Image (cartoon, rainbow, N blue to C red):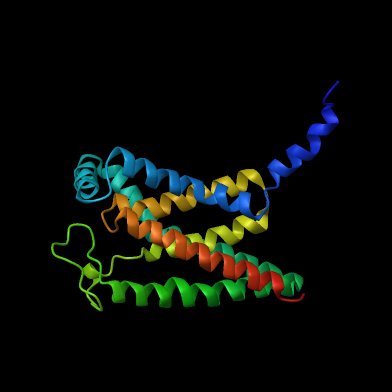
Length: 218
């Protein structure tokens, strides 16, 4: 036989335990595909805003569900990281405790501080807001770019996906991340470009978290 059943074992193991790049692709794929599908089928500008405005009115139950997701999607992961920290503290696992500490610091610097600086600096109008961009505006309606919710969820989910190193949990985390990020478009709070920028910025935060936590000696 050209291939024996034993020859497939390493392949299956690699598929079920994705490394850094495959895990990142798998985790971000649901959101990327949703953004691409929306851009191709609906558009990228006011047509998206108008479409979802009508869709929200026609589907109030789904809209209420998406509102809950957008409000509590990120805070739910605070509980996950908190559980990791307290479990590590109970076991005396200093590596996991440092991982959570790095996560907190990087998220504060990137998902909070850097996002706020960019939002204010660009002054991009939110969906449905008339007029051009107003750079250095402190008004919320001109603080659309990038999406802070998306930056934060990506910065939280991707490091977890890299830690779990398993196919199904990584895909589940990616779907969760995709729903939270896409809820911002569905609810008319952000443009596609805002969410995509949040995905990129959150990816930077995730990489920093991974590298700093990985390089910290145990």
